[in-house]
Image 1 (cartoon, one colour):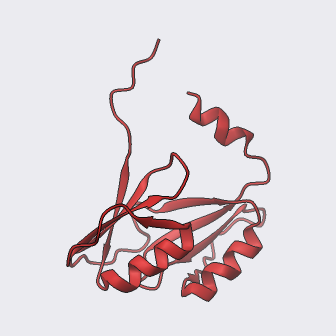
Image 2: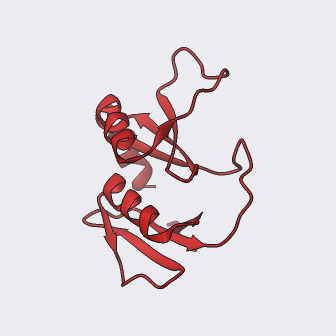
Image 3: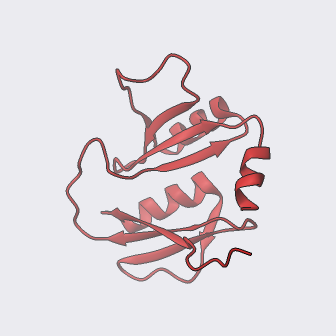
Length: 132
């Protein structure tokens, strides 16, 4: 039997405007504040899922492209979610290296933090990953 020694509980995103970024990510992921926000820190948690939290940290950070790390966000209906995220203030990122058959759309939040929206017509792979 495999004993889990480590677990990703929160992913930290550096931001400039904590209030605006908190509103964006709460609306984007349907998350809520775990505890009331501090002046420079907030942890957003899922309402009803066992997935990692998103923590927003007000710290200056140089933007590097392409980023060394980004979020992959799975969607039942990618086109609908891309439109919704765009309405919330996200932008689609154009990339010449995108394969013709890509199942993802590269986006960035209002401050330029990158993430991908992945088409996920079948969640069985996700459920299998969770069982490992």
